[in-house]
Length: 187
Length: 255
Image (tube, rainbow over all chains, first blue to last red; front, top):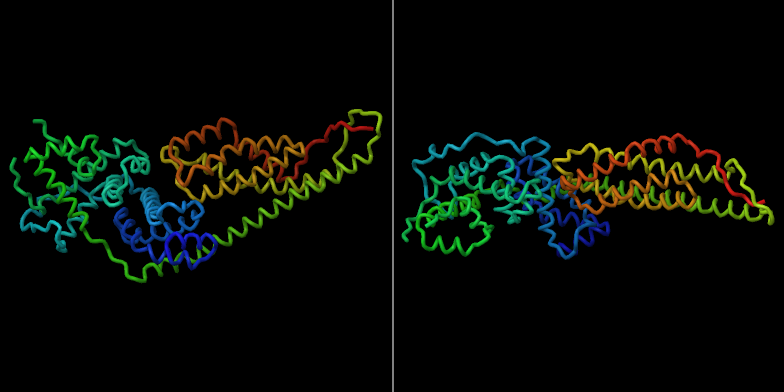
């Protein structure tokens, strides 16, 4: 059954149809939620809240729209609400990145499977972003949301949203540059 | 040659730059900027490839099991709303019936020649209509007051993101229209006026989608305050809830 057909049946009061949508999309929504919150338990809560809101708003879902995209937007909103409620939205997750600590023995893993250690560095670099930086970055980088929409979600102007994304990328670059191989260029 | 700064490179990476062809051209000819751009690209590729905690194949089922009872509660709430709507509709029918009875009684009692203005006490029929209207409007006003209170207390700098609020506004809007029209038809200007003041707010909330941005919220808060809406609703709610009756009416009566 397609998502559109399941939505139609769920609107008609068929719980099994909605159950199918939950089972089909939960894992993907968890990925969005985890990227946004950086915490497994919070991500689980966000997934649950996302489907609850989706159920309550089924009547507002336009049939022409993509259900998955619609669900992603709800998950982003739920994540932002959770971060705001916990007062984490504008706080930094941690201290400044100490990239120099990892400069020795740096692997060259571009586009290859990441080593466990490198994975930790990437995770740590993401955690060092402020709440706004992380959410703006995730929305732009992973969700492909336009900057205007990101600004609306965060309640900031377009230029501020652009700059927030830039700050996030800059911090990530500073933290992770030692792990990427620079290709010599010639003009 | 003017180099591209890091912000411009990031914008170019995400295709957010106004003139991508200019950046493209520069990157083609400038090895320094190209190297910096390549570093950004590789760092972001690392981030893209970073693993995410896995959830197993039964995850969807687990989420559904946690959701099921909440969704069931929603369905019950939906039935309760439907039940309230039926009561409201029945109340309107009852009012219409009593009004018809009253009109018929008055028509049969008309003296054909003289018309004077006479002070009358509300008849038992009128009192019954008032009671029915007051009971249903009182519930409606309490619900509306709660919603206005939430809006008035919301932080205007953050906007409001609440799909439940929007659904509630849609439900209240439907009831509000019905009660306002009924009150206006039976000449209860006091109720009709307050309900008419509430209605534009409910329309806006109902149409606002799931998110009310900061500017919109601030504007609605100003309107609530400017009209003294919360105060009016509280006063009317107290009057209707306590069974406060309209004063003795002055009607033109044919004798």
